[in-house]
Amino acid sequence: MTGPLDVVIVGGGTAGWMSAAGLVGVLKPDQCRVRLVESDEIGTVGVGEATLPQMREFNDLIGIVESDMMRKTNATFKIGIEFRDWGFKGSNYVHPFGAHGKAMGGVAFHHQWVRAGQQSRVADIGEYSYAIEACRKNRFDFPVDDPEAINSTYNYAYHFDASLYARYLRGWCEARGLTRIEGKVNDVALDPQSGDVASITLESGERITADLFIDCSGFRGLIIGQALNVPFEDWTRWLPCDRALAVPTERSEDFAPYTRSTALEAGWQWRIPLQHRTGNGYVYSSAFISDDEAMTRLLGNLDGKPLAEPRPIRFKSGRRTASWTKNCIAIGLASGFLEPLESTSIYLTQVAILNLLKLFPRSRIDPALAERFNRVVDNEYDRVRDFLILHYHATSRTDSELWRHCREMDIPDTLRDRMALFEHRGHIAQYRDGLFSPPSWLSVFVGQGMRPTGYHPMADNLPLETVTAGLEAIRRRVSERVEAMPMHDAFVRDYCAAA
Ligand code: FAD
Image (cartoon, rainbow, N blue to C red; front, side, top):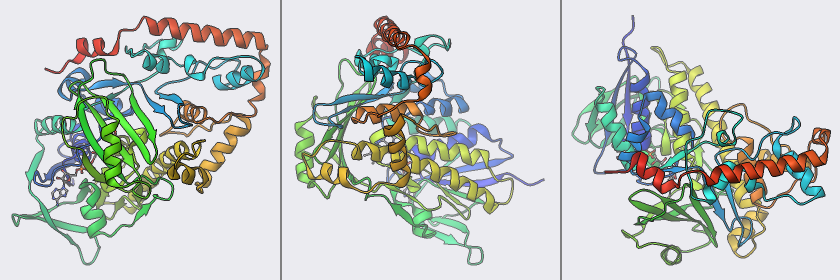
């Protein structure tokens, strides 16, 4: 019998504590022994307030009680992201966590919507989406299980205080026996023969060895970058935003169940309503605006009183070429970062953790496990990258240098192919797993102003009158059901009001 695999996590931000909770929650003590090193002196990046619905699967996996977690993290619900001024100034659409309408005549809903739209008048595609209508009316309720019901066609995530979530997970892990070590890592030693990480040394002089090191040290990539020299693939040429200013404002009385993203001249501004405050920030490209101008723009755009000075953050979009290298796995910002437009960072952390759990080594770390892990993680990063680029590239904005650059920039072939398929015949390929599903692509394609010239030929199998009547019935059902939902703020108050 071999003993448990000895795992040391470096870093106690969202990534570190989620990794710890995943390992402690799923593996038994005789399979894995986990210790976590973090430095209060260094602190965390301290942003990351919006999540995706997949996060619920992670919380369920480790047995977190939703209402308790929401209460302790000042959370609200999120059923989509509103994009203002992205397609053109004055435009507005929602990327919903859910479908648009329902399939009709054996083809996806949007083929019938396109077909009907070519011959008669149809409503905006958002009016057929339950999640979008709920966003528009500031309402929330849990989706029902009955697949026939229109209010089963959406999903939800959270807005929360990410530092409180990390603290919540820390308490959860420590209650299950995890050892937390406070201290600053000063040195990483590699084995001269194998090149594996042999040990880390803390400022106190304490030396810590392990079988597997998980690097959750944030942007600095203490082990993966600084010690193992794994290159970082820089995607700034496609995703030019590289800085952010984050500032909380006082709580909004009627918090919305969605994140708002407003496109500005040199980037975009976020607005995330929590129970106790509203998170705001300007994500911008330093190539197109100065820090001072960005600060003035952000402060002039707030709809509440600031509670602190705006905090500057620098970043680069891209990823490590191999997040699992030797006996080190980088998770979270140490592994890569895609600017926060679609709130995908915590999701990508979750993907890494779930894949680590799937591929967890028995005693020895086989390179085949690392190879498989890297393939899955790289794939996810690449697809999210394409989805983000679409928002910048498919725009008719020409009012500033950033937007002119993005319209004209070269894009990855994978995205070019997707856009061509959609424009030609409304086709949206479904990935076998991972982000993003066809309804998400549909919302952004259409929201950014793209329209297919054709549709699936099978759509013609139904008489047009049947289709237009079907569309109208869905639109009416969505509208009536949404009207009957509770208001989001009242729902949160009853379900999970913070103490
Ligand atoms: P960090 O939070 O930076 O934690 C690093 C940890 O490593 C800390 O505990 C630190 O003390 C420790 N550490 C570092 N060096 C040492 C050392 N030498 N010794 C000991 N310990 C050390 N994600 C989303 O999912 N949704 C969002 O809406 C979102 N918005 C974002 C907005 C912006 C502007 C940015 C920049 C990011 C956003 N993110 C978002 C990403 C999100 O912030 C991160 O995914 C998340 O916080 C995880 O960070 P992390 O744990 O990898 O790193």
